[in-house]
Length: 200
Image (cartoon, rainbow, N blue to C red):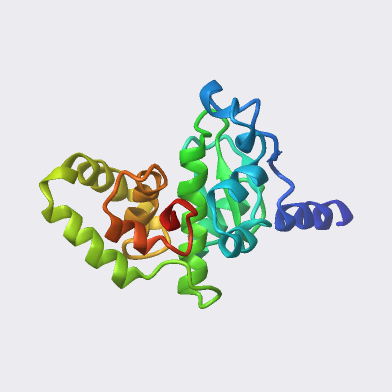
């Protein structure tokens, strides 16, 4: 009985996977060469505004055998999946080491910031404001490739079951283009409470 209880405790606190802190062994060489991307923490500090960084700094990254990355703890299904995989319940970023990149980190952390906003625990991104800006981008022919990429990735079984809510996947997929400033100013403004580049 003691062993079973200990096993349950490990699952609940998330001891089933390897926590990733140092990115040097995971990231593509062109990313890890940059000093700001040496660790998960330094990457988050470099990319996010102070308030957004503080909100996610204790949401840790864990390696996993599942190929698809996901934001654990954003809904019941993501918690169940995390629990089954030995990562416990609660907010975490679960990423397979083969798919780890700065882009994927940003994607998953934007999910958490979006979910924190929907839960009333912050004000990082407004769904209605995003929807209006995204609709405007869709009407602009110059962003067709970006829109096609986002819509293809955002609408599948995995994201619909384990996602945060309406428009969440679009927000997260678009975030990599926001971070690279490949979107119009009105879309940068939507992410003004998340990314440093949106305020430059």
